[in-house]
Length: 201
Image (tube, rainbow, N blue to C red):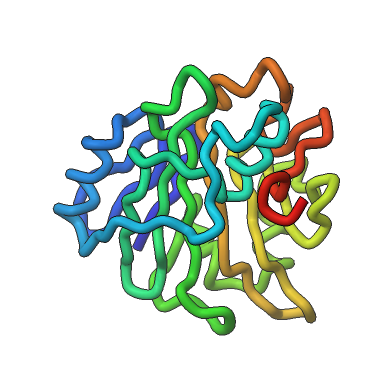
């Protein structure tokens, strides 16, 4: 079981320790390597901060998980759940600020519980999960199928196409250090950021 601790990070299975926001990359690698198999990975479409002349677009890419930083390439697997990490924004890229958890398959219920306050976020129907999360739980402005839960620092992805389907990806955020010059919120850029600038546009 992976347990989501709002504002703190993620407690790893079998008492292997807690992945905490603010940790340095080498601390993250050491903790994850001791807990499970890890590998270094890079998404084929990832861009670096230098590819975004405007902070708002870099922030959106960071939120989307396509902003690449060589220090944060560790990918860990816990059963059928894949964990990825990222540092903070400009001025704080050396401290853990984003943790992604996702199923390694597109359908079905996770065999590895991802839990918040006793609720298996991947194990229950999506609408049931949303109904017990603290408000406001709302769709982001440009990503209507997703749900953002600001009090928890949580965004749920790939929600149901029909009633009874399950969430299959979530992102946990620490403090949005470094992005304040362009974006007042953690979860979206009010200035119209676009993560695909430099990829498709």
